[in-house]
Image (cartoon, one colour):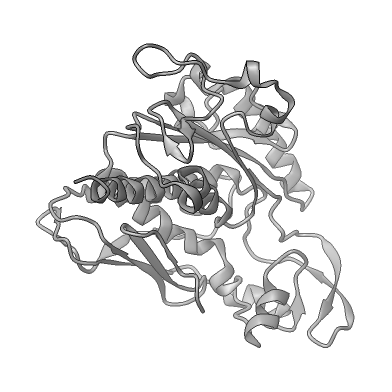
Length: 354
């Protein structure tokens, strides 16, 4: 299976399945001498882990990261950083009923067509359980680029939208509610909606917004490795992501150039930031901001018609423990993937200068 690594200089390779003994990863290319706060890594893991509130999957995992190499006396050594996260609360029997059945909108059918077999226990490698490895690596990346501030939050659940720009929000409020929305009133509506959807055995999607601040100008590569292209690749690699836009995004397509152009100030900053902090694929020093759309979770606690491995129509119903809305737990994943991209370009920018 190819496609398990991400990054050029700062590279993460992940391994493991949802119901295997453990998941883990190898971070290659991290420079020596970076101070790593292991407690901070674990705090990031707590934000993503299952069972953290009543509106997420109740699978109980400590998600404790065990570093095996690459860190000595609190600092990176410059060698590969290996880590594992043990799986402790697998209930593989919850998936025995789909051993020969393809769940709608899952990777069951496509994995079977590509590999000739699949791990039906929780989706195996296709499970969002793999994203725990990304959060662990992202926590290390954040400490490499500690001067940059990466903040993500829930801006929409279904049709409930946070109608405010990030500059008008108190981002310190994000972790004060279970949906991770920095607006108390909107957060309450989102939580109530998720609970209602869950009671119906259904699921709902939403949007995560992210802003990267204190970004130096000059990060990114021209043509194919544009900074926004890599951010898009990173976000679209996350389970359940269906859309990515940065800066003015699709709204920019409705504007005139005379309104959309970001005019310069004398210090090189711009009066507006429709570019989203990136021009020509390279950061310009302004805030980078983008939106990531997540579809509804595909597993429903409702009966659905599908087919089995013989192509026969059958009826199935989801079992086990699943998120009615993935968005609240996706917030730290979005931040982690953004951190991996920015760390990679930070190192690439160092090598491009004599």
